[in-house]
Structures are given as structure tokens and as C-alpha cells.
Length: 321
Image (cartoon, rainbow, N blue to C red; front, side, top):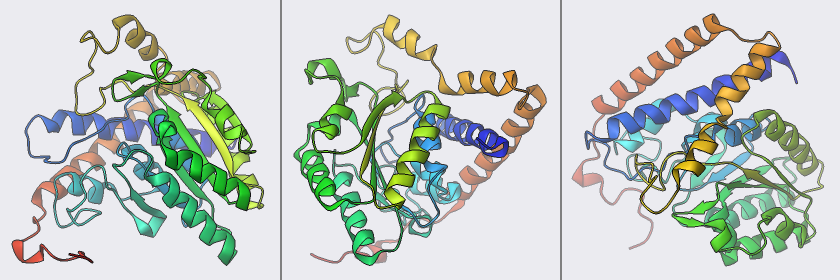
């Protein structure tokens, strides 16, 4: 991998982590009115995939899509303003955390409906195939979405039509608080995709190098007309399903399990790797964090100073009633 791209991957992951940590810190003040779903601990998946997407490639995400939005190039100020439901938000203050959009960089939307983004992304891939525009669609979803009918219907259709779509399952082993092994007998979702004739791999989603290599190959296949491709990325969210709690010791997750996954921090591992090959040091870390901290501070100041939608705008962007 190119050295510049290797350090950029690290920057992307650290930026995602720092943004979400700031969101978590601000949430207690109750000015952020939208529910939030944090992906702290899962940063390597979004960074490793999105580094190989072009600006006009399409991306669809879920209720937990801050990471994908930032990794694909979404505007941070607009994202934070959206969390505060301000007019300057990326969805004009009407979507909140679960409905981020940035069409200017190919993010056509994220959906709070579990599995709801899968058929949407399959649809844009069909459009790209018909138009022959060379675009690839990346669809991110969790292991819980694999329980939905839309998952199977979309994969079957995409395989039949050879669509240029990369399905990215962020398997964090939980659907809300229900463990994967209590929902699935076969703990290999990638094999389900293989059953539809889709090239599929189950990989370590906390290893950004592994994610990046597999995503580069998968996106290349899609761009050559050899899609769809499926990646199941094993990872773990440090926070609970919603909000800022970690739900450890409350009957949901054991301390032993939680501490194990904290020891597998994708950012710490990658920093140590970059240091071992001479691409990173303490001075680089300090400069990076200072730069990102200043950017985040500007974004929150922008959001808090932005106007709220007025009552006379209530019916704007409403196309049916």
C-alpha cells in the first residue's frame, strides 16, 4: 500500500473516533435532540472500504453511519449541525443522526430501518449497470440485517443481474442486545452470500490493512462488471446499541467479553504497526490530534450557532400528505 494512503487510513480512523467521543461528551447536555448510535471500536471497516471508493460512487448506511459519512467525505460541520437538528445540517435538520445524506460525495442516505438500505443500494447498482456509468455502490449493514427478508431478496437479485455492488456486513455480534449465536445457527454470514453465487469473504474487521486489501479487490471486481461482492467484517462496538452507555454488567455483555474486544482496538493496533515500520511517531500523533480537535471544535460551534428550521418550513421537502 502507498505510504501516504497508509497514514491517511490512520487519520480517518482517529478522526472518526474523536468525533464520536466528542458527540458522546456533548450528549449529556441534551442539546442534541436526535438519538445517536455510536460506532466507537468499528472504525477500521469504514476507513478500509471508503478509501477505495471514488467521490461519485454511491454509499448507503444504517442508523449507525457516522463513520461511513466521514470516511466517504461528508462535511463534518453539516453532520454535527444535523445532530442538533439545525437548518444547516446535511439533511436540513429533518433527519438527525440516523438519516445522514451527502449526495455531493455519493452518500444518498442512511436508513433507520434495519436492512432498509440494502434494497436501495441494490437499486442504484442496477441503475449504474443500465446506464453503464462505471459507478460502484457500497452498502453497509449489521449482522441483524441478515435476518431480514430484504437481505436475501437483494442478494439474490444482485447476483442474478451481476450488479456492481459491494455488500459490507459490519458483524459486531449483536442486534440491539441479542447475541448472534442466539439468532443464527451458522455463524458465517458470508457463507449465506456464497449460497447466492456471490464471491464472499469473512475477514477481521478490526485490521484496517486486511479490510483495505479485500475492499480494493472487491471494488475492482465490481468496477469490471464482476460484482456483486460480499465482505463480512468481524468487529465490535464499545458502546451500547443506542446512546452513550456501554451496557456492560447489566445482563447484556460480560466484562470479560468487553475487555477482550477493548484489547483489540483497531486504532491502537494500527498505530503500533505504523510505528514499527517508521511511518508514525509521538510528534505525528500530537499534531494529528491537535488538528482534528480544532476541526471538531469549529464544527460544534458552527452547529450551535446555526438556525433551527422555522414553523413555516414544516411542509418543505414533503412530497405526499
